[in-house]
Structures are given as C-alpha cells and as structure tokens.
Image (tube, rainbow, N blue to C red; front, side, top):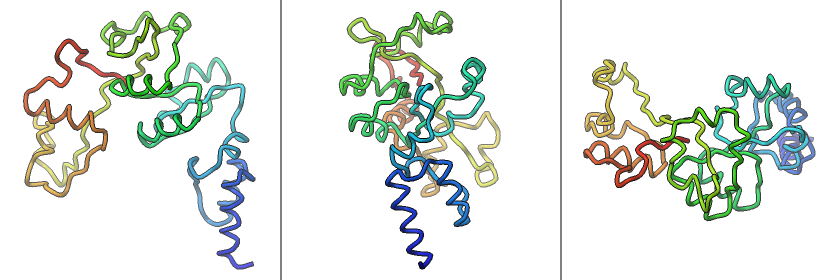
Length: 224
C-alpha cells in the first residue's frame, strides 16, 4: 500500500476512536512525527486514555503544568484529566454542544453569558479549604453569585500582558517605559499582534484614554 494511503487510513482510524492516545503516539512516531494534539482525536480515543476516577479539567493549554496541581497530585497520586481549548468561544461552543467537563475555566467577564447558557452550576465553597483566604474583592466579582448560588470562584488574575522584542524595540527595554501605549506606536505599525478577546481590547483602549473600564460600582479587578 502506498504511504499516502497508509496515512489516510491511520487518520480515519484515529478520528474513529480506534486508537488510544498512547497507541496513536507510537504510530505517529513510526511516521517520524513526535506529537499529536488532543483536538484531532475523537471523544472515544480520549476516553480510552482518561482515568474515570479523576475529574476532567477543561482549560487553556499551559495550565496542565505539574506545578499547578502539586497538592492534588500529592493527595490523589496523579494529575486530573485535562482537555484544552484555544479560547473561551471554543470552550463555550463545545459545552453548548453537549460536552460536560467536571471543572472549567472561564474569565470573569464571560460569567453572565455562560450562566445564561446553562453552563455553570453551584459551587460548594465549604469544601474549598482555601476559600476563607480569598480576598473579598475577588469573591465579589460581578455575576459570580446568581440567585443566591455561587457559580464561580477565582483561580488567578492579572494575566493580560505584553511581550516585547526589546532587540527590535529597544526603547521599551527599560521597565519604566513599558506601557500599553506601545500598541499605538506608529513606528511599529503592521508589526504588532494582539489577543482576539474583545473585552481585553476594550479595557486596554479605555486605560489609554484615561477611562476606568470597570467603573460604575463594578469590581476593578477581573480574575480568571
């Protein structure tokens, strides 16, 4: 059989859930390919590799670093199961279509949309040992409590930032000069990229204009 036909046959078997992730990695290695993304695989293939005794954490790639789950791993002997999304719109669409992870990770500004869509369930904070240590400003994030039920607890905050190539933009090497205004520097027109999260774009523009984007009685900090 020609290599092209072999590759097509492998793809069909993979998408049909005929391989577990570990089996797929072995076959991919024989093709000289070292990695494969979870999104390529069917639910059946993913399920074969998951431990049903552990919850599924649906989150951004990068939050599966072992350092985030030290206490969980110490207590339960392994990390939870992970599934990943590229952005909140992808996560929202997948869950609206019926995917039901045990834990997921929207940002504060998305809460009302997710709750109205029926994607958030009440959280029992009395089972969270660190809940008493959470600062009140984070507990009071708008839409985190609905109809008397807490549907959201903060995990982290302040993740929006810039990455600057100081070898190409040396004027921003000094931390004192690092500002959101760099995004409006015409010198670098056509050489900038930005997250497609709309509420972050509006918030950054508001700050440049001297406007508090979270004014009018709302929390000034939006944790994730």
